Image (cartoon, rainbow, N blue to C red; front, top):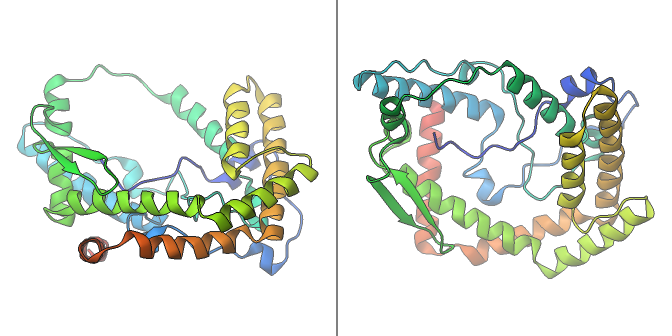
Length: 298
């Protein structure tokens, strides 16, 4: 089912506790303060945990109704009503505050631990072609949406997951959602290539090098930790990766603060949003916000 975008991180406190690496040092109130969410257009196509859970419940129930009408039993996912298994970061730029870095790192090791547990517990089942066709639709019956960034989105017009989105949000949701998501991606690209951001990131990289880490961008550090976590073969290895993650994240956050990378990104994103929106896109954005809020209000 196409859902609002989620990040591939996990609740780091629980998993770091599992490997004995929850940060135990004290932090100042400033360290503990989380930065404001920094997704384009005030998070128009991004969801908090509470919002995600609320809309997931509605989508699962609407999907179950559609599947029942087609003769199939579709039990709504228990995760939709339970506590979230993942936590969305506050921004798409790799910005991190010191308090979170010292205690949670990037959340990569906890996510890997949870992924391994789910994989071990999963019981593979052979898919029913008729069931799959009812749920995700026929590839011969699709709607192609042309998006502002030149890409396309394909939506299965007869799928129960599509019908569920229409029931929860309204019939024009897919067009609006994919349009604003494409606009958001354009804003993110323009933000990270803004000259002021490039300058700040170069200063951040130099700062990080002095702290004993090499990376051209925040993503570089995360990717390196991700590779190590996926390659860790046993508990001692995963513990070593967790320690490395906490150290890297703290150095990362400290250097971001020193070079004021966050402020450079916020300013650049504001400029990018103004460059990206025209009158039609402003109307689309407002309509999508209204549909999203109406769904969450229910």
